Length: 107
Image 1: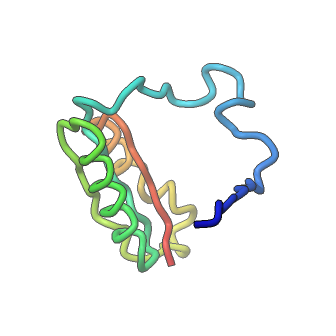
Image 2: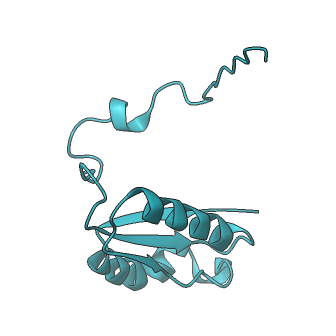
């Protein structure tokens, strides 16, 4: 069998977690063992499916306390202003219930 060589390239010139000064990003846990992982889909059709797959993989790899899937946003509320403004209370509540949050967009 021939040796296959794959080179992966990133379109990002600098990774944010390496370039941003300390204190500007949320702290990262050393492990996910014992953590509650929150999955936060947006309104895109495949976001829930992507996050379910990620949740399953994380459960196989770590000893998670729980995986919590938040309800997806039903639509983009453009008439109400910025999306983040309409979700502020929901996001604050979500952040209090989980140790780590993962979000996804999927078409």
